[in-house]
Length: 467
Image 1 (cartoon, rainbow, N blue to C red):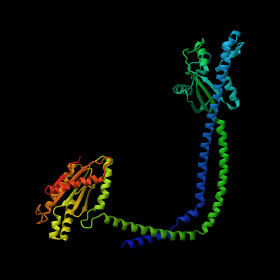
Image 2 (cartoon, rainbow, N blue to C red; image 1 turned 90 degrees about the horizontal axis):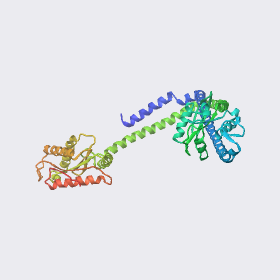
Image 3 (tube, rainbow, N blue to C red; image 1 turned 45 degrees about the vertical axis):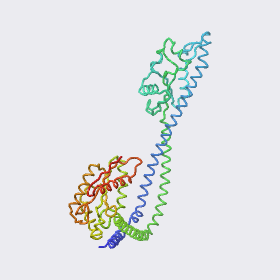
Image 4 (cartoon, helix red, strand yellow; image 1 turned 135 degrees about the vertical axis):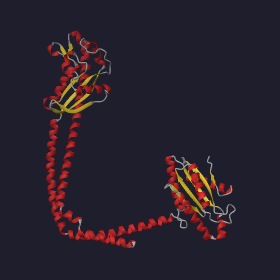
């Protein structure tokens, strides 16, 4: 069967198959089911996406609120220390004013900055929001040992993290006292106005504080259970509205699909006709591609000898040169020429000369065994052997085998001054491509070696000695 006959037979089989069954009919018939599944999956994806987005927003908002609380407490504490505590120390003690943690039990006493900061934090948080604050340290004063030390995993991890980098915050979302909460902590840095008091206080647990030391951890605890619940409720209402909209859309689409179903037979016929035309074009294109591939192979093959021609050699040389440059390997080129070929043609005739070239091509091709070796006719009576990843020594061994192979054919050449049989001269060059070099250098080097072989008496191999 010819190629075109096979093409049209395949086209006939394709047409018969499409007439028996059409996917369009199946889609129209089951459109309601498919759309229901699609809308259901869409609703689920939207729900999870909104849920994740809302939870992220709740957490981000909680972090921002905690930062505001911390900033407010830190500013108040700093202001209270500089504007009240320092002035009382400088002028108030002479009037009997005392700065102490248990100021409520004493007359003429005011609270310490840390004490007042914690009171302010409790007032700012309020009972409704549930926000609370803590100030703790591994070095608590005796009256704070029970509630202000590192008494859980978060406080210990926060202390380690802030000791390592006091400029950053440390936070975690975890269950705290039965509620999902944000625990957000910042370093409490020792200020110049506080160093003296902390180092000189009679009950101080540490008396070598320096300005800039991390003296403790200021933590804000923000419950987010109620926020998450509100968000989830909003998402559920949104999802119900979305389902209703999708249901109405599904009903409308179903009505449209019923009308489409009436015309499905006509649509199928048109689809089959279009498929026939497309298939015919595809097969025709495939047929022409095969023909073009055969023409390309013919264009890369020498018509006389059947080996690769000069064009194929140029392509392979460029590819192997780039590969050798990338891999850092040797690339060898053997150029060989039939000795006294002009004399052979002049005396035996050009047809006999062509037979000699064909016989040599067959014999030499048998010696080329590696798939990475390329044997090509370079032009006239000249051939080349391109050897990838081949050292000069290995290439010399192959070249000598090729020379002996031709000589042992014992093809008569009475008009040769070199030998009474047909012989060849060979030039070998081996290069390791480097930056800035080009493939033409390898050709020139092999050509120089070939002419050296001819000048030295022919029927021999000469190796180009590179710089």
